[in-house]
Image (cartoon, rainbow, N blue to C red; front, top):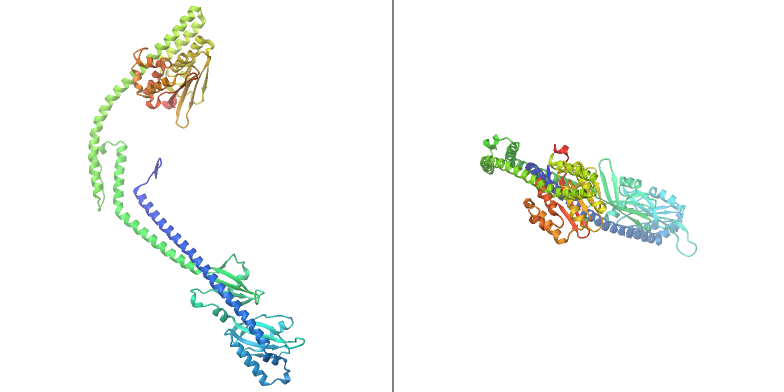
Length: 608
Protein backbone atom coordinates (compact mmCIF):
# COMPACT_ATOMS: atom_id res chain seq x y z
CA UNK A 1 0.00 0.00 0.00
CA UNK A 2 1.32 3.45 -0.97
CA UNK A 3 0.16 6.66 0.70
CA UNK A 4 0.36 10.01 -1.09
CA UNK A 5 -1.00 12.87 0.94
CA UNK A 6 -4.60 11.97 1.73
CA UNK A 7 -4.75 9.33 -1.03
CA UNK A 8 -4.12 5.59 -0.69
CA UNK A 9 -2.93 3.59 -3.68
CA UNK A 10 -3.57 -0.16 -3.83
CA UNK A 11 -2.78 -2.73 -6.51
CA UNK A 12 -5.77 -3.87 -8.54
CA UNK A 13 -5.57 -7.42 -7.19
CA UNK A 14 -5.65 -6.17 -3.62
CA UNK A 15 -8.60 -3.94 -4.45
CA UNK A 16 -10.54 -7.00 -5.64
CA UNK A 17 -9.62 -8.87 -2.46
CA UNK A 18 -10.54 -5.84 -0.35
CA UNK A 19 -13.94 -5.53 -2.03
CA UNK A 20 -14.67 -9.21 -1.47
CA UNK A 21 -13.49 -8.99 2.14
CA UNK A 22 -15.74 -5.99 2.75
CA UNK A 23 -18.62 -7.83 1.08
CA UNK A 24 -18.05 -10.84 3.32
CA UNK A 25 -17.70 -8.75 6.48
CA UNK A 26 -20.80 -6.67 5.68
CA UNK A 27 -22.81 -9.83 5.00
CA UNK A 28 -21.61 -11.41 8.25
CA UNK A 29 -22.41 -8.17 10.07
CA UNK A 30 -25.93 -8.14 8.66
CA UNK A 31 -26.37 -11.80 9.65
CA UNK A 32 -25.06 -11.14 13.15
CA UNK A 33 -27.31 -8.15 13.59
CA UNK A 34 -30.32 -10.10 12.30
CA UNK A 35 -29.56 -13.01 14.61
CA UNK A 36 -29.06 -10.65 17.53
CA UNK A 37 -32.27 -8.79 16.75
CA UNK A 38 -34.19 -12.05 16.36
CA UNK A 39 -32.68 -13.32 19.64
CA UNK A 40 -33.90 -10.20 21.41
CA UNK A 41 -37.32 -10.75 19.85
CA UNK A 42 -37.25 -14.35 21.02
CA UNK A 43 -36.25 -13.26 24.53
CA UNK A 44 -39.16 -10.85 24.58
CA UNK A 45 -41.48 -13.61 23.38
CA UNK A 46 -40.18 -16.05 25.98
CA UNK A 47 -40.51 -13.52 28.78
CA UNK A 48 -44.01 -12.60 27.66
CA UNK A 49 -45.01 -16.25 27.35
CA UNK A 50 -43.47 -17.08 30.70
CA UNK A 51 -45.28 -14.20 32.36
CA UNK A 52 -48.61 -15.18 30.83
CA UNK A 53 -48.27 -18.91 31.47
CA UNK A 54 -46.77 -18.69 34.97
CA UNK A 55 -49.26 -16.12 36.22
CA UNK A 56 -52.18 -18.22 34.97
CA UNK A 57 -50.64 -21.38 36.42
CA UNK A 58 -50.06 -19.72 39.79
CA UNK A 59 -53.60 -18.34 39.83
CA UNK A 60 -55.13 -21.73 39.02
CA UNK A 61 -52.91 -23.43 41.60
CA UNK A 62 -53.92 -20.98 44.33
CA UNK A 63 -57.59 -21.41 43.45
CA UNK A 64 -57.17 -25.21 43.47
CA UNK A 65 -55.64 -25.25 46.96
CA UNK A 66 -58.28 -22.84 48.24
CA UNK A 67 -60.87 -25.19 46.83
CA UNK A 68 -59.13 -28.14 48.55
CA UNK A 69 -59.32 -26.20 51.79
CA UNK A 70 -63.09 -25.81 51.38
CA UNK A 71 -63.39 -29.51 50.59
CA UNK A 72 -61.42 -30.39 53.70
CA UNK A 73 -63.67 -28.24 55.85
CA UNK A 74 -66.79 -29.72 54.30
CA UNK A 75 -65.55 -33.27 54.95
CA UNK A 76 -64.12 -32.64 58.43
CA UNK A 77 -67.38 -31.27 59.70
CA UNK A 78 -69.71 -33.52 57.75
CA UNK A 79 -72.22 -35.29 59.98
CA UNK A 80 -71.35 -38.79 58.72
CA UNK A 81 -67.64 -38.16 59.43
CA UNK A 82 -68.48 -36.78 62.87
CA UNK A 83 -70.68 -39.77 63.62
CA UNK A 84 -68.03 -42.21 62.52
CA UNK A 85 -65.31 -40.64 64.67
CA UNK A 86 -67.51 -40.02 67.74
CA UNK A 87 -69.18 -43.43 67.81
CA UNK A 88 -67.32 -45.88 70.05
CA UNK A 89 -65.67 -48.79 68.33
CA UNK A 90 -67.97 -51.28 69.99
CA UNK A 91 -71.05 -49.54 68.66
CA UNK A 92 -69.90 -49.13 65.07
CA UNK A 93 -71.98 -50.84 62.47
CA UNK A 94 -71.34 -51.67 58.88
CA UNK A 95 -73.99 -49.18 57.95
CA UNK A 96 -72.01 -46.30 59.56
CA UNK A 97 -68.91 -47.21 57.60
CA UNK A 98 -70.88 -47.38 54.35
CA UNK A 99 -72.29 -43.95 55.00
CA UNK A 100 -68.75 -42.61 55.58
CA UNK A 101 -67.46 -44.30 52.44
CA UNK A 102 -70.35 -42.93 50.42
CA UNK A 103 -69.68 -39.44 51.68
CA UNK A 104 -65.96 -39.68 50.84
CA UNK A 105 -66.71 -41.03 47.35
CA UNK A 106 -69.15 -38.21 46.69
CA UNK A 107 -66.59 -35.64 47.76
CA UNK A 108 -63.82 -37.19 45.65
CA UNK A 109 -66.00 -36.80 42.58
CA UNK A 110 -65.98 -33.05 43.10
CA UNK A 111 -62.38 -32.77 41.85
CA UNK A 112 -60.59 -35.06 39.40
CA UNK A 113 -57.22 -34.40 41.02
CA UNK A 114 -58.25 -35.99 44.35
CA UNK A 115 -56.65 -39.45 44.50
CA UNK A 116 -57.66 -40.37 48.05
CA UNK A 117 -59.49 -39.12 51.15
CA UNK A 118 -58.53 -40.65 54.49
CA UNK A 119 -59.71 -40.23 58.07
CA UNK A 120 -57.32 -41.08 60.89
CA UNK A 121 -59.01 -40.95 64.33
CA UNK A 122 -57.32 -40.02 67.57
CA UNK A 123 -57.72 -43.62 68.78
CA UNK A 124 -55.90 -44.89 65.60
CA UNK A 125 -59.00 -45.90 63.70
CA UNK A 126 -58.58 -45.46 59.93
CA UNK A 127 -60.81 -45.20 56.88
CA UNK A 128 -59.75 -44.34 53.30
CA UNK A 129 -60.87 -44.66 49.71
CA UNK A 130 -57.65 -45.97 48.13
CA UNK A 131 -54.74 -45.71 50.46
CA UNK A 132 -53.71 -47.78 53.41
CA UNK A 133 -52.97 -46.77 56.95
CA UNK A 134 -49.24 -47.15 56.22
CA UNK A 135 -49.44 -44.22 53.83
CA UNK A 136 -50.68 -41.87 56.54
CA UNK A 137 -49.35 -43.32 59.79
CA UNK A 138 -46.19 -41.19 59.91
CA UNK A 139 -48.10 -38.04 58.96
CA UNK A 140 -50.67 -38.70 61.67
CA UNK A 141 -48.00 -39.25 64.34
CA UNK A 142 -46.17 -36.00 63.47
CA UNK A 143 -49.31 -33.90 63.31
CA UNK A 144 -51.25 -35.24 66.33
CA UNK A 145 -48.70 -33.84 68.73
CA UNK A 146 -49.18 -30.23 67.67
CA UNK A 147 -52.13 -28.02 66.98
CA UNK A 148 -52.38 -27.05 63.32
CA UNK A 149 -54.78 -25.84 60.72
CA UNK A 150 -55.14 -26.67 57.05
CA UNK A 151 -51.66 -27.49 55.83
CA UNK A 152 -49.39 -29.71 53.76
CA UNK A 153 -48.30 -32.92 55.42
CA UNK A 154 -45.85 -34.12 52.75
CA UNK A 155 -45.65 -36.41 49.73
CA UNK A 156 -46.43 -40.10 49.39
CA UNK A 157 -47.23 -42.64 46.68
CA UNK A 158 -50.76 -43.96 46.41
CA UNK A 159 -51.73 -46.43 43.68
CA UNK A 160 -48.39 -45.74 41.93
CA UNK A 161 -49.14 -42.05 41.84
CA UNK A 162 -47.13 -39.39 43.64
CA UNK A 163 -49.61 -37.47 45.77
CA UNK A 164 -49.41 -34.25 47.67
CA UNK A 165 -50.99 -34.85 51.11
CA UNK A 166 -53.07 -32.07 52.65
CA UNK A 167 -54.17 -32.37 56.26
CA UNK A 168 -56.77 -30.76 58.50
CA UNK A 169 -57.65 -31.52 62.15
CA UNK A 170 -61.20 -32.71 62.93
CA UNK A 171 -62.95 -31.42 66.03
CA UNK A 172 -66.34 -32.35 67.40
CA UNK A 173 -69.39 -30.24 66.64
CA UNK A 174 -72.09 -29.17 69.01
CA UNK A 175 -72.34 -27.32 72.30
CA UNK A 176 -69.75 -27.42 74.95
CA UNK A 177 -66.04 -27.95 74.66
CA UNK A 178 -64.85 -29.00 71.19
CA UNK A 179 -63.01 -32.31 71.31
CA UNK A 180 -60.14 -33.36 68.99
CA UNK A 181 -61.36 -36.34 66.96
CA UNK A 182 -58.63 -36.99 64.41
CA UNK A 183 -57.10 -35.89 61.14
CA UNK A 184 -58.50 -35.62 57.65
CA UNK A 185 -56.06 -36.35 54.79
CA UNK A 186 -56.60 -35.25 51.19
CA UNK A 187 -54.28 -36.86 48.61
CA UNK A 188 -53.82 -34.69 45.46
CA UNK A 189 -52.37 -35.97 42.20
CA UNK A 190 -49.91 -33.05 41.64
CA UNK A 191 -48.96 -34.17 38.17
CA UNK A 192 -52.60 -34.05 37.10
CA UNK A 193 -53.04 -30.80 39.01
CA UNK A 194 -50.30 -28.92 37.11
CA UNK A 195 -51.12 -30.52 33.76
CA UNK A 196 -54.72 -29.38 34.05
CA UNK A 197 -53.92 -25.99 35.56
CA UNK A 198 -53.23 -24.54 32.11
CA UNK A 199 -54.36 -25.48 28.64
CA UNK A 200 -51.26 -27.14 27.19
CA UNK A 201 -52.67 -27.09 23.65
CA UNK A 202 -52.22 -23.29 23.54
CA UNK A 203 -48.43 -23.35 23.88
CA UNK A 204 -45.56 -24.68 21.78
CA UNK A 205 -43.14 -25.14 24.67
CA UNK A 206 -42.89 -27.37 27.70
CA UNK A 207 -42.00 -25.40 30.86
CA UNK A 208 -40.44 -26.86 33.95
CA UNK A 209 -42.40 -26.64 37.24
CA UNK A 210 -40.78 -26.90 40.67
CA UNK A 211 -43.14 -27.04 43.65
CA UNK A 212 -41.68 -26.67 47.17
CA UNK A 213 -43.29 -26.62 50.61
CA UNK A 214 -42.83 -23.92 53.20
CA UNK A 215 -39.50 -25.45 54.27
CA UNK A 216 -38.30 -25.69 50.63
CA UNK A 217 -38.72 -29.45 50.60
CA UNK A 218 -39.26 -30.90 47.15
CA UNK A 219 -42.84 -31.84 46.24
CA UNK A 220 -43.10 -31.87 42.48
CA UNK A 221 -40.93 -31.28 39.39
CA UNK A 222 -37.53 -32.25 38.04
CA UNK A 223 -35.37 -33.54 40.95
CA UNK A 224 -32.10 -32.78 39.13
CA UNK A 225 -33.18 -29.23 38.45
CA UNK A 226 -34.25 -28.87 42.07
CA UNK A 227 -30.81 -30.00 43.27
CA UNK A 228 -29.18 -27.29 41.16
CA UNK A 229 -31.62 -24.62 42.34
CA UNK A 230 -30.93 -25.15 46.03
CA UNK A 231 -27.17 -24.77 45.41
CA UNK A 232 -27.31 -21.64 43.26
CA UNK A 233 -28.77 -18.20 43.77
CA UNK A 234 -31.06 -17.05 41.01
CA UNK A 235 -29.84 -13.89 39.20
CA UNK A 236 -32.87 -11.76 38.40
CA UNK A 237 -35.28 -13.76 36.24
CA UNK A 238 -32.52 -15.90 34.70
CA UNK A 239 -31.21 -19.19 36.06
CA UNK A 240 -28.13 -20.68 34.34
CA UNK A 241 -27.51 -24.38 34.84
CA UNK A 242 -24.20 -25.87 33.70
CA UNK A 243 -24.27 -29.57 32.94
CA UNK A 244 -21.38 -31.75 31.95
CA UNK A 245 -22.38 -31.80 28.30
CA UNK A 246 -23.92 -28.39 27.74
CA UNK A 247 -25.13 -25.21 29.38
CA UNK A 248 -28.85 -24.64 29.84
CA UNK A 249 -30.38 -21.27 30.58
CA UNK A 250 -33.85 -20.95 32.09
CA UNK A 251 -36.05 -17.91 32.43
CA UNK A 252 -37.66 -18.30 35.84
CA UNK A 253 -40.69 -16.90 37.70
CA UNK A 254 -41.38 -17.45 41.37
CA UNK A 255 -44.78 -17.41 43.11
CA UNK A 256 -45.99 -18.06 46.65
CA UNK A 257 -49.18 -20.05 47.26
CA UNK A 258 -50.36 -18.24 50.41
CA UNK A 259 -53.07 -20.67 51.49
CA UNK A 260 -50.44 -23.35 52.25
CA UNK A 261 -47.34 -21.08 52.13
CA UNK A 262 -45.74 -23.12 49.32
CA UNK A 263 -43.38 -21.87 46.60
CA UNK A 264 -43.99 -22.40 42.89
CA UNK A 265 -41.20 -22.00 40.31
CA UNK A 266 -42.00 -21.87 36.59
CA UNK A 267 -38.98 -22.13 34.26
CA UNK A 268 -38.69 -22.03 30.46
CA UNK A 269 -35.60 -23.40 28.71
CA UNK A 270 -34.21 -20.62 26.48
CA UNK A 271 -31.11 -22.54 25.43
CA UNK A 272 -32.90 -24.64 22.84
CA UNK A 273 -33.89 -21.58 20.83
CA UNK A 274 -30.38 -20.15 21.02
CA UNK A 275 -28.91 -23.42 19.81
CA UNK A 276 -31.25 -23.32 16.85
CA UNK A 277 -30.27 -19.71 16.15
CA UNK A 278 -26.58 -20.69 16.34
CA UNK A 279 -27.17 -23.47 13.83
CA UNK A 280 -28.97 -21.05 11.50
CA UNK A 281 -26.14 -18.54 11.85
CA UNK A 282 -23.49 -21.18 11.09
CA UNK A 283 -25.38 -22.29 8.00
CA UNK A 284 -25.67 -18.68 6.80
CA UNK A 285 -22.00 -18.05 7.56
CA UNK A 286 -20.88 -21.15 5.66
CA UNK A 287 -23.12 -20.21 2.74
CA UNK A 288 -21.72 -16.69 2.66
CA UNK A 289 -18.15 -18.02 2.82
CA UNK A 290 -18.80 -20.44 -0.02
CA UNK A 291 -20.41 -17.67 -2.12
CA UNK A 292 -17.46 -15.33 -1.46
CA UNK A 293 -14.98 -18.05 -2.41
CA UNK A 294 -16.90 -18.74 -5.63
CA UNK A 295 -16.95 -15.04 -6.56
CA UNK A 296 -13.24 -14.77 -5.77
CA UNK A 297 -12.52 -17.73 -8.05
CA UNK A 298 -14.54 -16.22 -10.90
CA UNK A 299 -12.85 -12.84 -10.49
CA UNK A 300 -9.46 -14.51 -10.48
CA UNK A 301 -10.24 -16.36 -13.71
CA UNK A 302 -11.61 -13.22 -15.39
CA UNK A 303 -9.20 -10.55 -14.15
CA UNK A 304 -5.96 -12.44 -13.68
CA UNK A 305 -4.95 -11.87 -17.36
CA UNK A 306 -5.76 -8.17 -16.95
CA UNK A 307 -3.72 -7.84 -13.77
CA UNK A 308 -0.80 -9.76 -15.28
CA UNK A 309 -0.82 -7.53 -18.38
CA UNK A 310 -0.94 -4.36 -16.30
CA UNK A 311 2.01 -5.60 -14.25
CA UNK A 312 4.00 -6.16 -17.45
CA UNK A 313 3.19 -2.64 -18.64
CA UNK A 314 4.10 -1.21 -15.21
CA UNK A 315 7.38 -3.10 -15.22
CA UNK A 316 8.22 -1.74 -18.67
CA UNK A 317 7.45 1.81 -17.50
CA UNK A 318 9.78 1.36 -14.51
CA UNK A 319 12.48 0.19 -16.92
CA UNK A 320 11.97 3.39 -18.92
CA UNK A 321 12.14 5.55 -15.78
CA UNK A 322 15.43 3.89 -14.77
CA UNK A 323 17.06 5.34 -17.92
CA UNK A 324 17.15 2.34 -20.26
CA UNK A 325 17.25 4.09 -23.62
CA UNK A 326 17.01 0.83 -25.57
CA UNK A 327 13.43 0.36 -24.32
CA UNK A 328 12.32 3.32 -26.45
CA UNK A 329 13.30 1.43 -29.58
CA UNK A 330 12.21 -2.05 -28.48
CA UNK A 331 8.79 -0.97 -27.16
CA UNK A 332 6.53 -2.93 -24.82
CA UNK A 333 5.51 -6.53 -25.55
CA UNK A 334 2.68 -8.13 -23.56
CA UNK A 335 2.15 -11.88 -23.20
CA UNK A 336 -1.44 -12.38 -22.12
CA UNK A 337 -1.80 -16.14 -22.55
CA UNK A 338 -4.74 -17.97 -24.08
CA UNK A 339 -7.31 -15.36 -23.07
CA UNK A 340 -6.36 -11.98 -24.50
CA UNK A 341 -7.96 -8.63 -23.73
CA UNK A 342 -8.47 -6.41 -26.77
CA UNK A 343 -8.08 -3.17 -24.82
CA UNK A 344 -4.65 -4.26 -23.54
CA UNK A 345 -3.44 -4.84 -27.10
CA UNK A 346 -4.75 -1.40 -28.13
CA UNK A 347 -2.97 0.20 -25.18
CA UNK A 348 0.32 -1.48 -26.10
CA UNK A 349 0.09 -0.36 -29.74
CA UNK A 350 -0.71 3.26 -28.78
CA UNK A 351 1.99 3.23 -26.09
CA UNK A 352 4.68 2.03 -28.52
CA UNK A 353 3.71 4.75 -31.01
CA UNK A 354 3.93 7.31 -28.24
CA UNK A 355 7.39 6.04 -27.25
CA UNK A 356 8.66 6.43 -30.80
CA UNK A 357 7.39 9.99 -31.03
CA UNK A 358 8.68 10.80 -27.55
CA UNK A 359 12.15 9.55 -28.43
CA UNK A 360 12.24 11.82 -31.45
CA UNK A 361 10.99 14.79 -29.44
CA UNK A 362 13.50 14.13 -26.68
CA UNK A 363 16.41 14.54 -29.07
CA UNK A 364 14.99 17.81 -30.37
CA UNK A 365 14.15 19.17 -26.90
CA UNK A 366 17.54 18.16 -25.49
CA UNK A 367 19.44 20.01 -28.19
CA UNK A 368 17.23 23.08 -27.77
CA UNK A 369 17.57 22.95 -23.97
CA UNK A 370 21.36 22.92 -24.16
CA UNK A 371 21.38 26.06 -26.27
CA UNK A 372 18.84 27.81 -24.01
CA UNK A 373 20.72 26.79 -20.87
CA UNK A 374 23.94 28.32 -22.13
CA UNK A 375 22.13 31.54 -23.03
CA UNK A 376 20.27 31.69 -19.68
CA UNK A 377 23.42 31.01 -17.70
CA UNK A 378 25.31 33.80 -19.43
CA UNK A 379 22.33 36.14 -19.02
CA UNK A 380 21.94 35.44 -15.26
CA UNK A 381 25.62 35.95 -14.61
CA UNK A 382 25.51 39.24 -16.48
CA UNK A 383 22.42 40.40 -14.54
CA UNK A 384 23.89 39.52 -11.13
CA UNK A 385 27.17 41.27 -11.96
CA UNK A 386 25.19 44.33 -13.09
CA UNK A 387 23.25 44.45 -9.81
CA UNK A 388 26.35 44.12 -7.69
CA UNK A 389 28.01 46.93 -9.70
CA UNK A 390 24.99 49.14 -8.96
CA UNK A 391 25.46 48.83 -5.19
CA UNK A 392 29.10 49.77 -5.02
CA UNK A 393 29.03 53.28 -6.61
CA UNK A 394 26.01 54.29 -4.53
CA UNK A 395 27.64 53.26 -1.25
CA UNK A 396 31.02 54.70 -2.29
CA UNK A 397 29.47 58.08 -2.94
CA UNK A 398 28.01 58.37 0.57
CA UNK A 399 31.19 57.10 2.28
CA UNK A 400 33.58 59.37 0.36
CA UNK A 401 31.38 62.32 1.21
CA UNK A 402 31.73 61.43 4.91
CA UNK A 403 35.54 61.05 4.57
CA UNK A 404 35.76 64.49 2.97
CA UNK A 405 33.92 65.91 5.95
CA UNK A 406 36.35 64.19 8.35
CA UNK A 407 39.33 65.51 6.40
CA UNK A 408 37.99 69.02 6.62
CA UNK A 409 37.84 68.67 10.39
CA UNK A 410 41.28 67.02 10.62
CA UNK A 411 40.11 63.62 11.94
CA UNK A 412 43.07 61.65 10.64
CA UNK A 413 42.66 58.63 12.97
CA UNK A 414 39.03 58.24 12.12
CA UNK A 415 39.81 58.65 8.41
CA UNK A 416 42.23 55.73 8.70
CA UNK A 417 39.62 53.54 10.49
CA UNK A 418 36.91 54.38 8.03
CA UNK A 419 39.21 53.86 5.04
CA UNK A 420 40.27 50.43 6.34
CA UNK A 421 36.63 49.44 6.87
CA UNK A 422 35.77 50.72 3.38
CA UNK A 423 38.56 48.71 1.81
CA UNK A 424 37.35 45.55 3.60
CA UNK A 425 33.85 46.11 2.22
CA UNK A 426 35.00 46.59 -1.37
CA UNK A 427 37.46 43.70 -1.23
CA UNK A 428 34.61 41.53 0.08
CA UNK A 429 32.22 42.66 -2.70
CA UNK A 430 34.56 41.97 -5.63
CA UNK A 431 36.32 38.77 -4.52
CA UNK A 432 35.25 35.27 -3.54
CA UNK A 433 32.11 33.28 -4.17
CA UNK A 434 28.67 34.75 -4.81
CA UNK A 435 27.31 32.73 -1.86
CA UNK A 436 28.61 33.49 1.65
CA UNK A 437 27.57 32.56 5.17
CA UNK A 438 25.43 34.94 7.19
CA UNK A 439 28.39 35.29 9.58
CA UNK A 440 30.64 36.54 6.76
CA UNK A 441 27.97 38.94 5.53
CA UNK A 442 27.43 40.33 9.04
CA UNK A 443 31.18 41.01 9.44
CA UNK A 444 30.93 43.42 6.50
CA UNK A 445 27.66 44.89 7.84
CA UNK A 446 29.39 45.58 11.16
CA UNK A 447 32.23 47.33 9.29
CA UNK A 448 29.64 49.40 7.44
CA UNK A 449 27.81 50.31 10.68
CA UNK A 450 31.12 51.38 12.23
CA UNK A 451 31.50 53.83 9.35
CA UNK A 452 27.95 55.10 9.81
CA UNK A 453 28.46 55.36 13.58
CA UNK A 454 31.41 57.69 12.94
CA UNK A 455 29.19 59.70 10.66
CA UNK A 456 26.05 60.03 12.81
CA UNK A 457 27.41 59.65 16.33
CA UNK A 458 24.65 59.02 18.90
CA UNK A 459 21.79 59.69 16.48
CA UNK A 460 20.89 55.99 16.48
CA UNK A 461 21.81 52.70 18.19
CA UNK A 462 21.88 49.21 16.74
CA UNK A 463 21.75 45.65 18.08
CA UNK A 464 21.81 42.08 16.72
CA UNK A 465 19.50 39.16 17.43
CA UNK A 466 20.65 35.94 15.71
CA UNK A 467 19.61 32.38 16.54
CA UNK A 468 22.44 29.89 16.97
CA UNK A 469 21.59 27.91 13.81
CA UNK A 470 21.30 30.96 11.54
CA UNK A 471 24.90 32.22 11.15
CA UNK A 472 26.04 29.18 9.13
CA UNK A 473 23.31 29.55 6.48
CA UNK A 474 24.44 30.49 2.96
CA UNK A 475 23.04 33.71 1.46
CA UNK A 476 23.85 35.79 -1.66
CA UNK A 477 26.67 38.26 -1.10
CA UNK A 478 25.85 41.91 -0.39
CA UNK A 479 22.08 41.58 0.23
CA UNK A 480 21.98 42.88 3.83
CA UNK A 481 24.30 45.90 3.54
CA UNK A 482 22.16 47.72 0.92
CA UNK A 483 19.06 47.31 3.09
CA UNK A 484 20.91 48.50 6.21
CA UNK A 485 22.16 51.51 4.24
CA UNK A 486 18.61 52.19 3.05
CA UNK A 487 17.29 52.05 6.64
CA UNK A 488 19.89 54.55 7.85
CA UNK A 489 19.81 57.01 4.96
CA UNK A 490 16.07 57.08 4.30
CA UNK A 491 14.73 56.15 7.72
CA UNK A 492 16.90 57.05 10.71
CA UNK A 493 18.77 60.00 9.16
CA UNK A 494 15.54 61.84 8.31
CA UNK A 495 14.05 61.30 11.78
CA UNK A 496 14.23 64.19 14.27
CA UNK A 497 14.43 61.83 17.26
CA UNK A 498 17.10 59.29 18.20
CA UNK A 499 16.37 55.89 16.67
CA UNK A 500 17.46 52.31 16.73
CA UNK A 501 18.34 49.66 14.15
CA UNK A 502 17.81 45.96 14.80
CA UNK A 503 19.20 43.18 12.63
CA UNK A 504 18.28 39.55 13.31
CA UNK A 505 17.78 36.13 11.74
CA UNK A 506 16.19 32.80 12.62
CA UNK A 507 15.20 29.53 10.97
CA UNK A 508 11.50 28.88 10.39
CA UNK A 509 11.08 25.26 11.62
CA UNK A 510 7.78 24.72 9.82
CA UNK A 511 8.74 25.87 6.31
CA UNK A 512 12.52 25.32 6.51
CA UNK A 513 13.74 28.76 5.37
CA UNK A 514 15.94 31.38 7.06
CA UNK A 515 14.27 34.72 7.79
CA UNK A 516 16.50 37.84 8.07
CA UNK A 517 14.97 41.10 9.25
CA UNK A 518 16.18 44.73 9.30
CA UNK A 519 14.01 46.95 11.48
CA UNK A 520 14.50 50.70 11.96
CA UNK A 521 12.55 53.20 14.04
CA UNK A 522 12.90 55.94 11.44
CA UNK A 523 10.33 58.08 9.69
CA UNK A 524 8.54 55.18 7.96
CA UNK A 525 6.52 55.79 4.80
CA UNK A 526 2.91 56.66 3.94
CA UNK A 527 0.51 53.82 3.15
CA UNK A 528 0.10 54.75 -0.54
CA UNK A 529 3.85 54.79 -1.07
CA UNK A 530 4.17 51.43 0.74
CA UNK A 531 1.54 49.92 -1.55
CA UNK A 532 3.37 51.18 -4.65
CA UNK A 533 6.62 49.71 -3.39
CA UNK A 534 5.00 46.35 -2.65
CA UNK A 535 3.47 46.34 -6.14
CA UNK A 536 6.84 47.05 -7.73
CA UNK A 537 8.41 44.20 -5.74
CA UNK A 538 5.72 41.60 -6.47
CA UNK A 539 5.00 42.52 -10.13
CA UNK A 540 7.57 41.44 -12.70
CA UNK A 541 10.60 41.71 -10.36
CA UNK A 542 13.04 41.28 -13.22
CA UNK A 543 11.92 44.63 -14.68
CA UNK A 544 13.85 46.24 -11.83
CA UNK A 545 17.02 45.23 -13.65
CA UNK A 546 16.43 47.98 -16.21
CA UNK A 547 18.43 50.46 -14.22
CA UNK A 548 19.78 53.52 -16.07
CA UNK A 549 21.40 55.37 -13.18
CA UNK A 550 20.16 57.36 -10.18
CA UNK A 551 17.50 59.14 -12.26
CA UNK A 552 15.63 56.02 -13.42
CA UNK A 553 11.88 55.74 -13.06
CA UNK A 554 12.12 53.32 -10.14
CA UNK A 555 14.38 55.50 -8.03
CA UNK A 556 12.29 58.55 -8.82
CA UNK A 557 9.14 56.79 -7.70
CA UNK A 558 10.57 55.50 -4.40
CA UNK A 559 13.40 57.95 -3.70
CA UNK A 560 11.84 58.99 -0.42
CA UNK A 561 12.70 55.75 1.30
CA UNK A 562 13.87 52.73 -0.65
CA UNK A 563 16.11 54.16 -3.40
CA UNK A 564 17.63 51.55 -5.60
CA UNK A 565 18.71 49.33 -2.69
CA UNK A 566 15.39 47.55 -2.04
CA UNK A 567 14.57 46.93 -5.72
CA UNK A 568 18.13 45.87 -6.38
CA UNK A 569 18.20 43.28 -3.57
CA UNK A 570 14.73 42.04 -4.51
CA UNK A 571 15.79 41.46 -8.11
CA UNK A 572 18.86 39.51 -6.97
CA UNK A 573 16.74 37.33 -4.69
CA UNK A 574 14.42 36.50 -7.59
CA UNK A 575 17.36 35.64 -9.80
CA UNK A 576 18.83 33.32 -7.17
CA UNK A 577 15.72 31.65 -5.77
CA UNK A 578 12.67 32.51 -7.86
CA UNK A 579 9.60 34.73 -7.44
CA UNK A 580 8.56 33.04 -4.16
CA UNK A 581 11.44 34.76 -2.35
CA UNK A 582 10.67 38.45 -2.89
CA UNK A 583 11.19 40.89 -0.02
CA UNK A 584 8.49 41.43 2.63
CA UNK A 585 8.05 45.04 3.77
CA UNK A 586 5.98 46.55 6.58
CA UNK A 587 6.09 50.26 7.36
CA UNK A 588 4.08 52.87 9.24
CA UNK A 589 4.68 56.56 8.95
CA UNK A 590 6.21 57.97 12.12
CA UNK A 591 6.85 54.47 13.55
CA UNK A 592 9.43 52.76 11.37
CA UNK A 593 10.06 50.12 8.72
CA UNK A 594 10.71 46.38 8.83
CA UNK A 595 12.15 44.47 5.84
CA UNK A 596 12.38 40.68 5.81
CA UNK A 597 14.50 38.51 3.54
CA UNK A 598 13.80 34.77 3.16
CA UNK A 599 16.35 32.33 1.80
CA UNK A 600 16.30 28.49 1.68
CA UNK A 601 18.24 27.15 4.65
CA UNK A 602 21.42 25.51 3.38
CA UNK A 603 24.88 25.36 4.95
CA UNK A 604 28.18 25.22 3.09
CA UNK A 605 28.51 21.53 3.99
CA UNK A 606 25.11 20.77 2.47
CA UNK A 607 25.93 22.88 -0.59
CA UNK A 608 29.13 20.89 -1.20
